[in-house]
Image 1 (cartoon, rainbow, N blue to C red):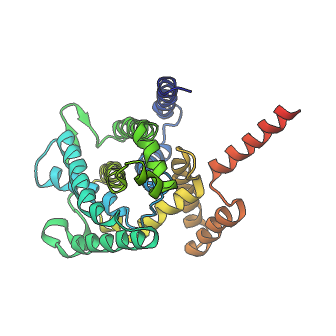
Image 2 (image 1 turned 90 degrees about the vertical axis):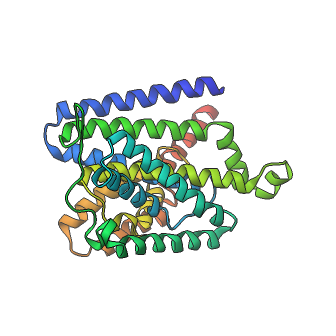
Image 3 (image 1 turned 120 degrees about the vertical axis):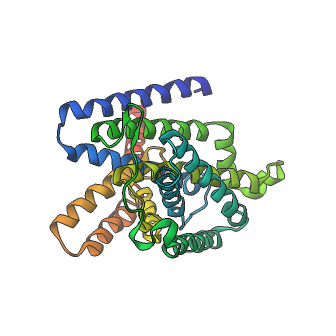
Length: 322
Protein backbone atom coordinates (compact mmCIF):
# COMPACT_ATOMS: atom_id res chain seq x y z
CA UNK A 1 0.00 0.00 0.00
CA UNK A 2 1.50 3.30 -1.04
CA UNK A 3 1.65 6.35 1.19
CA UNK A 4 -1.17 8.20 -0.56
CA UNK A 5 -3.67 5.33 -0.31
CA UNK A 6 -2.67 4.71 3.32
CA UNK A 7 -3.30 8.39 4.10
CA UNK A 8 -6.73 8.25 2.45
CA UNK A 9 -7.63 5.09 4.36
CA UNK A 10 -6.58 6.63 7.69
CA UNK A 11 -8.52 9.80 6.87
CA UNK A 12 -11.69 7.83 6.10
CA UNK A 13 -11.34 5.85 9.34
CA UNK A 14 -10.84 9.08 11.31
CA UNK A 15 -13.91 10.71 9.72
CA UNK A 16 -16.02 7.60 10.32
CA UNK A 17 -14.92 7.44 13.95
CA UNK A 18 -15.63 11.12 14.43
CA UNK A 19 -19.10 10.74 12.88
CA UNK A 20 -19.93 7.94 15.31
CA UNK A 21 -18.70 9.97 18.28
CA UNK A 22 -20.63 13.06 17.21
CA UNK A 23 -23.82 10.99 17.01
CA UNK A 24 -23.54 9.47 20.51
CA UNK A 25 -25.27 12.36 22.39
CA UNK A 26 -28.37 11.92 20.21
CA UNK A 27 -28.73 8.29 21.35
CA UNK A 28 -27.46 8.69 24.93
CA UNK A 29 -28.87 11.88 26.46
CA UNK A 30 -27.34 11.23 29.89
CA UNK A 31 -23.96 12.56 31.04
CA UNK A 32 -22.33 9.21 31.80
CA UNK A 33 -21.41 8.38 28.21
CA UNK A 34 -20.41 11.98 27.43
CA UNK A 35 -18.14 12.26 30.47
CA UNK A 36 -16.57 8.90 29.65
CA UNK A 37 -15.73 9.90 26.06
CA UNK A 38 -14.30 13.28 27.17
CA UNK A 39 -12.00 11.53 29.64
CA UNK A 40 -11.16 8.92 26.99
CA UNK A 41 -10.12 11.69 24.60
CA UNK A 42 -7.73 13.05 27.25
CA UNK A 43 -6.27 9.73 28.39
CA UNK A 44 -6.29 8.25 24.88
CA UNK A 45 -4.05 11.07 23.64
CA UNK A 46 -1.89 10.73 26.74
CA UNK A 47 -1.36 6.98 26.29
CA UNK A 48 -0.92 7.16 22.50
CA UNK A 49 1.67 9.94 22.84
CA UNK A 50 3.60 7.78 25.31
CA UNK A 51 3.47 4.89 22.84
CA UNK A 52 5.37 7.07 20.34
CA UNK A 53 8.26 6.63 22.75
CA UNK A 54 7.59 3.09 24.00
CA UNK A 55 6.20 1.22 21.01
CA UNK A 56 7.78 3.12 18.12
CA UNK A 57 10.93 4.51 19.71
CA UNK A 58 11.86 1.80 22.20
CA UNK A 59 12.16 4.42 24.97
CA UNK A 60 10.19 3.52 28.11
CA UNK A 61 9.43 6.75 29.92
CA UNK A 62 8.33 6.65 33.57
CA UNK A 63 7.79 10.41 33.69
CA UNK A 64 5.43 11.17 30.81
CA UNK A 65 2.77 12.60 33.11
CA UNK A 66 4.87 15.73 33.61
CA UNK A 67 3.75 16.79 30.13
CA UNK A 68 0.12 15.82 30.74
CA UNK A 69 0.14 17.91 33.91
CA UNK A 70 2.30 20.61 32.31
CA UNK A 71 -0.20 21.07 29.49
CA UNK A 72 -3.09 21.27 31.96
CA UNK A 73 -1.35 23.85 34.16
CA UNK A 74 -0.04 25.94 31.26
CA UNK A 75 -3.50 26.07 29.70
CA UNK A 76 -5.21 26.79 33.03
CA UNK A 77 -2.80 29.55 34.03
CA UNK A 78 -2.99 31.25 30.63
CA UNK A 79 -6.80 31.19 30.83
CA UNK A 80 -7.15 32.03 34.52
CA UNK A 81 -4.35 34.53 35.15
CA UNK A 82 -3.25 35.52 31.66
CA UNK A 83 -6.70 36.24 30.26
CA UNK A 84 -5.85 34.38 27.04
CA UNK A 85 -8.51 33.07 24.68
CA UNK A 86 -9.04 29.33 24.36
CA UNK A 87 -7.10 28.92 21.06
CA UNK A 88 -4.20 31.04 22.33
CA UNK A 89 -4.11 29.12 25.61
CA UNK A 90 -4.07 25.77 23.77
CA UNK A 91 -1.24 26.98 21.55
CA UNK A 92 0.61 28.28 24.62
CA UNK A 93 0.24 24.91 26.37
CA UNK A 94 1.61 23.12 23.29
CA UNK A 95 4.59 25.49 23.07
CA UNK A 96 5.27 25.10 26.80
CA UNK A 97 5.26 21.30 26.51
CA UNK A 98 7.45 21.47 23.39
CA UNK A 99 10.01 23.62 25.24
CA UNK A 100 9.87 21.40 28.32
CA UNK A 101 10.22 18.32 26.11
CA UNK A 102 13.18 19.84 24.29
CA UNK A 103 15.07 20.70 27.49
CA UNK A 104 14.40 17.38 29.23
CA UNK A 105 14.61 15.28 26.08
CA UNK A 106 17.97 16.73 25.06
CA UNK A 107 19.36 15.23 28.26
CA UNK A 108 17.38 12.01 28.55
CA UNK A 109 17.51 10.64 24.99
CA UNK A 110 21.29 10.34 25.20
CA UNK A 111 20.78 7.53 27.71
CA UNK A 112 19.63 3.97 27.07
CA UNK A 113 17.04 1.65 28.58
CA UNK A 114 16.73 1.82 32.37
CA UNK A 115 18.82 4.98 32.69
CA UNK A 116 16.47 6.82 30.33
CA UNK A 117 13.43 5.50 32.23
CA UNK A 118 14.61 6.58 35.65
CA UNK A 119 15.92 9.94 34.53
CA UNK A 120 12.51 10.80 33.08
CA UNK A 121 11.01 9.73 36.42
CA UNK A 122 13.45 12.01 38.25
CA UNK A 123 12.48 14.99 36.08
CA UNK A 124 8.81 14.24 36.67
CA UNK A 125 9.36 14.24 40.44
CA UNK A 126 11.11 17.60 40.06
CA UNK A 127 8.21 19.08 38.07
CA UNK A 128 5.69 17.71 40.57
CA UNK A 129 7.67 19.23 43.45
CA UNK A 130 7.70 22.61 41.72
CA UNK A 131 3.91 22.44 41.29
CA UNK A 132 3.44 21.57 44.96
CA UNK A 133 5.81 24.21 46.35
CA UNK A 134 5.05 27.15 44.03
CA UNK A 135 1.77 27.84 45.80
CA UNK A 136 1.36 31.44 44.65
CA UNK A 137 1.30 30.35 41.01
CA UNK A 138 -0.05 26.81 40.96
CA UNK A 139 -2.17 26.68 44.12
CA UNK A 140 0.06 23.99 45.62
CA UNK A 141 -1.57 20.71 46.60
CA UNK A 142 -5.01 22.30 46.18
CA UNK A 143 -4.47 22.83 42.46
CA UNK A 144 -5.78 25.72 40.37
CA UNK A 145 -8.88 26.80 42.25
CA UNK A 146 -11.64 29.07 41.05
CA UNK A 147 -12.30 27.38 37.74
CA UNK A 148 -11.15 28.16 34.20
CA UNK A 149 -13.03 30.54 31.88
CA UNK A 150 -14.46 28.25 29.22
CA UNK A 151 -16.29 30.67 26.96
CA UNK A 152 -14.83 32.09 23.75
CA UNK A 153 -17.24 34.01 21.59
CA UNK A 154 -20.11 31.68 20.77
CA UNK A 155 -18.09 28.66 21.92
CA UNK A 156 -19.26 27.75 25.43
CA UNK A 157 -17.20 24.81 26.68
CA UNK A 158 -18.93 24.99 30.05
CA UNK A 159 -21.81 23.24 28.29
CA UNK A 160 -21.18 19.48 28.46
CA UNK A 161 -22.37 18.82 24.89
CA UNK A 162 -20.18 21.55 23.44
CA UNK A 163 -17.19 20.32 25.45
CA UNK A 164 -17.94 16.77 24.31
CA UNK A 165 -17.93 17.65 20.61
CA UNK A 166 -14.87 19.89 21.04
CA UNK A 167 -12.98 17.06 22.81
CA UNK A 168 -13.98 14.53 20.15
CA UNK A 169 -12.80 16.75 17.30
CA UNK A 170 -9.55 17.67 19.04
CA UNK A 171 -8.89 14.04 20.05
CA UNK A 172 -9.56 12.57 16.59
CA UNK A 173 -7.52 15.29 14.83
CA UNK A 174 -4.55 14.70 17.14
CA UNK A 175 -4.76 10.92 16.75
CA UNK A 176 -4.87 11.34 12.97
CA UNK A 177 -1.83 13.64 13.09
CA UNK A 178 0.10 11.14 15.21
CA UNK A 179 -0.85 8.33 12.84
CA UNK A 180 0.24 10.38 9.83
CA UNK A 181 3.57 11.26 11.45
CA UNK A 182 4.25 7.63 12.39
CA UNK A 183 3.47 6.50 8.83
CA UNK A 184 5.81 9.12 7.38
CA UNK A 185 9.53 8.61 6.63
CA UNK A 186 10.25 10.03 10.09
CA UNK A 187 8.10 7.34 11.68
CA UNK A 188 9.92 4.55 9.84
CA UNK A 189 13.26 6.12 10.73
CA UNK A 190 12.20 6.08 14.38
CA UNK A 191 11.41 2.37 14.08
CA UNK A 192 14.83 1.77 12.50
CA UNK A 193 16.49 3.54 15.41
CA UNK A 194 14.42 1.43 17.83
CA UNK A 195 15.39 -1.84 16.15
CA UNK A 196 19.09 -1.13 15.61
CA UNK A 197 20.47 2.24 16.62
CA UNK A 198 24.05 1.33 15.65
CA UNK A 199 23.06 0.36 12.13
CA UNK A 200 20.94 3.50 11.77
CA UNK A 201 23.88 5.64 12.85
CA UNK A 202 26.15 3.79 10.40
CA UNK A 203 23.69 4.74 7.63
CA UNK A 204 24.10 8.42 8.51
CA UNK A 205 21.03 8.92 10.70
CA UNK A 206 21.45 11.24 13.66
CA UNK A 207 20.01 8.94 16.35
CA UNK A 208 19.97 11.58 19.09
CA UNK A 209 18.07 14.03 16.89
CA UNK A 210 15.45 11.47 15.82
CA UNK A 211 14.84 10.44 19.41
CA UNK A 212 14.66 14.07 20.51
CA UNK A 213 12.08 14.91 17.84
CA UNK A 214 10.00 11.92 18.95
CA UNK A 215 10.29 13.04 22.58
CA UNK A 216 9.12 16.56 21.74
CA UNK A 217 6.20 15.28 19.65
CA UNK A 218 5.11 12.96 22.44
CA UNK A 219 5.36 15.84 24.91
CA UNK A 220 3.13 18.10 22.81
CA UNK A 221 0.37 15.53 22.28
CA UNK A 222 0.43 14.58 25.97
CA UNK A 223 0.02 18.28 26.76
CA UNK A 224 -3.08 18.45 24.54
CA UNK A 225 -4.50 15.55 26.52
CA UNK A 226 -3.86 17.60 29.65
CA UNK A 227 -5.70 20.56 28.08
CA UNK A 228 -8.82 18.43 27.53
CA UNK A 229 -8.66 17.18 31.12
CA UNK A 230 -8.23 20.74 32.42
CA UNK A 231 -11.33 21.80 30.50
CA UNK A 232 -13.25 18.79 31.83
CA UNK A 233 -12.49 19.46 35.51
CA UNK A 234 -12.20 23.26 35.05
CA UNK A 235 -8.82 23.30 36.74
CA UNK A 236 -5.49 21.52 37.10
CA UNK A 237 -4.24 19.40 39.98
CA UNK A 238 -0.85 18.01 41.07
CA UNK A 239 -2.12 14.45 40.55
CA UNK A 240 -2.00 15.09 36.81
CA UNK A 241 1.80 15.14 36.96
CA UNK A 242 2.35 12.52 39.68
CA UNK A 243 4.30 9.34 38.97
CA UNK A 244 1.20 7.16 39.38
CA UNK A 245 -0.33 8.91 36.36
CA UNK A 246 2.65 7.84 34.27
CA UNK A 247 2.18 4.32 35.60
CA UNK A 248 -1.43 4.35 34.47
CA UNK A 249 -0.36 5.37 30.96
CA UNK A 250 2.03 2.40 30.87
CA UNK A 251 -0.82 0.14 32.04
CA UNK A 252 -3.03 1.52 29.26
CA UNK A 253 -0.43 0.57 26.67
CA UNK A 254 0.07 -2.88 28.20
CA UNK A 255 -3.67 -3.57 28.27
CA UNK A 256 -4.46 -2.13 24.84
CA UNK A 257 -1.36 -3.15 22.93
CA UNK A 258 1.76 -1.32 21.85
CA UNK A 259 2.09 -2.85 18.38
CA UNK A 260 -1.15 -1.40 16.99
CA UNK A 261 -1.68 2.33 16.74
CA UNK A 262 -5.17 2.35 18.31
CA UNK A 263 -4.08 -0.02 21.10
CA UNK A 264 -3.33 2.66 23.74
CA UNK A 265 -6.78 4.25 23.20
CA UNK A 266 -8.41 0.84 23.70
CA UNK A 267 -6.25 0.34 26.78
CA UNK A 268 -7.27 3.73 28.14
CA UNK A 269 -10.94 2.80 27.75
CA UNK A 270 -10.41 -0.58 29.40
CA UNK A 271 -8.52 0.88 32.36
CA UNK A 272 -11.19 3.56 32.86
CA UNK A 273 -13.97 0.93 32.83
CA UNK A 274 -12.09 -1.34 35.23
CA UNK A 275 -11.30 1.61 37.51
CA UNK A 276 -14.94 2.68 37.62
CA UNK A 277 -16.21 -0.87 38.29
CA UNK A 278 -13.57 -1.70 40.90
CA UNK A 279 -14.07 1.59 42.75
CA UNK A 280 -17.80 0.88 43.06
CA UNK A 281 -17.54 -2.80 44.03
CA UNK A 282 -14.53 -3.21 46.32
CA UNK A 283 -12.28 -1.27 48.63
CA UNK A 284 -9.25 -3.31 47.53
CA UNK A 285 -8.76 -1.17 44.47
CA UNK A 286 -5.02 -1.67 44.06
CA UNK A 287 -5.18 -5.45 44.50
CA UNK A 288 -8.03 -5.92 42.01
CA UNK A 289 -6.45 -3.68 39.39
CA UNK A 290 -3.10 -5.40 39.84
CA UNK A 291 -4.68 -8.80 39.15
CA UNK A 292 -6.28 -7.44 35.96
CA UNK A 293 -2.98 -5.99 34.73
CA UNK A 294 -1.23 -9.29 35.51
CA UNK A 295 -3.89 -11.10 33.46
CA UNK A 296 -3.06 -8.99 30.42
CA UNK A 297 0.70 -9.13 30.99
CA UNK A 298 1.02 -12.85 31.87
CA UNK A 299 -2.21 -14.37 30.56
CA UNK A 300 -2.58 -12.78 27.14
CA UNK A 301 1.14 -11.82 27.10
CA UNK A 302 0.16 -8.82 24.98
CA UNK A 303 -2.42 -6.06 24.80
CA UNK A 304 -6.00 -6.63 23.69
CA UNK A 305 -5.57 -5.27 20.15
CA UNK A 306 -2.31 -7.17 19.65
CA UNK A 307 -4.11 -10.34 20.76
CA UNK A 308 -7.01 -9.77 18.36
CA UNK A 309 -4.69 -8.96 15.45
CA UNK A 310 -2.65 -12.11 16.09
CA UNK A 311 -5.80 -14.29 16.12
CA UNK A 312 -7.02 -12.64 12.91
CA UNK A 313 -3.68 -13.22 11.18
CA UNK A 314 -3.60 -16.83 12.36
CA UNK A 315 -7.10 -17.49 11.01
CA UNK A 316 -6.20 -15.78 7.73
CA UNK A 317 -3.16 -18.04 7.29
CA UNK A 318 -5.24 -21.15 8.03
CA UNK A 319 -7.86 -20.01 5.48
CA UNK A 320 -5.18 -19.42 2.86
CA UNK A 321 -3.68 -22.89 3.37
CA UNK A 322 -7.02 -24.57 3.14
